Amino acid sequence: METNNIEETFSDLIPVWDKMEEKHKNLILNNIEYKTFKQNDAVHDNDVSCLGLVLIKKGKLRAYMVSESGREISLYYLNDMDICLMSASCAMKDISIDVFIDAMEESEVIIIPTIIYNRISKESLVFSNYINEIMASRFSDVMWLLEQVMFKKFDQRLAEFVLYHMNDDKKLNMTHEQIANHLGSAREVVSRMLKHFVSCGYIKLYRGGIEVVDEKGLYGISEGN
Image 1 (cartoon, one colour):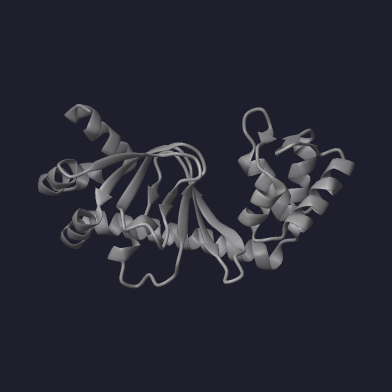
Image 2 (cartoon, rainbow, N blue to C red):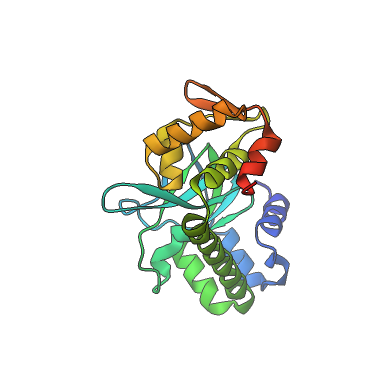
């Protein structure tokens, strides 16, 4: 990739890029790595070494936790031009929880190795302040999730999930088991609620997926109407 194109890419990925010192920008540019994760590949887990700071050029990642019984729940999602902090969690002394990151679709990423990320975080106030802003945003996402789980009915959460993840054809290609993993629920609960949505005329079910028929009606459910 040509230098000008790399600079433009980082200007898009890191809003404070133009405010950073040249020595720090050059340090990043001279050490970055490129990687493509296939759908369902593990980006970060207990068995994967600490990658560093992952910048998502194109794709979608999912951050989630797993209970002792093996039940999963999604914490947040990362899309094009987002930054994945947890992939550099080994450089964050105060992070003591196990968060897993998987690719939900084929994803092209740029990686700033941990040692480089660590050094620049210590030396560049502009960069470290920006990282803190992202950290606060991720914390806000998790608090939003906690609010959903504690105070929203499951039908609202499920309707919201379907609307958020459906594609341009208003289809969601996920099994009931996969949806349950995202929502921290049981497959039987998801199946029962989806059948209710079908009876109301909001969706149609097909093998391995869902088609939204009445988007407005499903949105009303998500809003508690």
